[in-house]
Amino acid sequence: MEKDKKTNKKKNITLAVMSAVFAVSLMCSCGGGATKSVDSEHAKSSAGQTSADDLEEPEKEPKRTVQLYLSDEDEHKVTVLDFGEDSAFGGIEVETDEEGELVCVDKGGSIWCKITDSRFGTYSKLSRFARKHMGSGEADKFLQEADVYFVTSNGNLYFVDGAGGRTISSNKRYVMNGGSTVQISSTHTAECRKKYGITRSSVDFVKSDGKWKLSSIQNS
Image 1 (cartoon, one colour):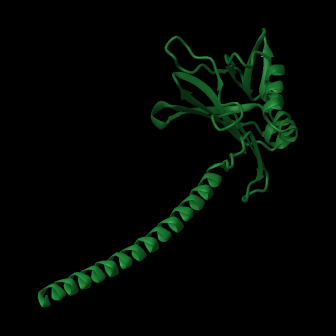
Image 2 (tube, helix red, strand yellow; image 1 turned 135 degrees about the horizontal axis):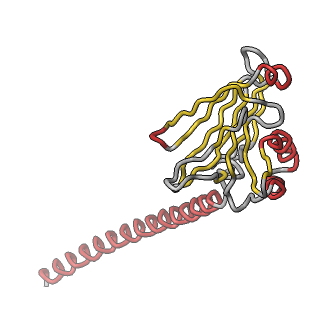
């Protein structure tokens, strides 16, 4: 009889211990669940913020077309007309020979390059393109500077350095960047310097996809 009482007592102690362990486990489980729930809500909130940031569009760089500034040395105007890949034009295709070499003709004080870009068969088309792809103020400023450099002859459009009385006295051609750039640097006449303030000019052509394209002209 005494033995049965001891056995029952041990069973009661074991059950009590198991109950206590179960209660502690339940509390830990509930605490862990609460922590997980908060973490999940934080993750959802963070994900929502990231998604909103991803919707913001990066700022686009403006297309460069014409730059006007004064030289620090002699305070005369320097003009840069940009027709290159970063401008609204993306480069203007010009004539090449059968071997794919750039064709520019020296005609007594001016350099002529035939425009073969199908977008610009006439100067009117080039003007309309400029007004369509630039702001009106920027287009007006650009065309005012560019007008003298484009000449229509025999039904073709040419880019001409030295037109409109800006006569060239001498020029040199340089091949740069492993043959992918040709620069024609010119010295202008005393009359041009006196009337227009232009002493030198540099015209850059860049070869892209096997085609030569007018990139820029700088007067100084």
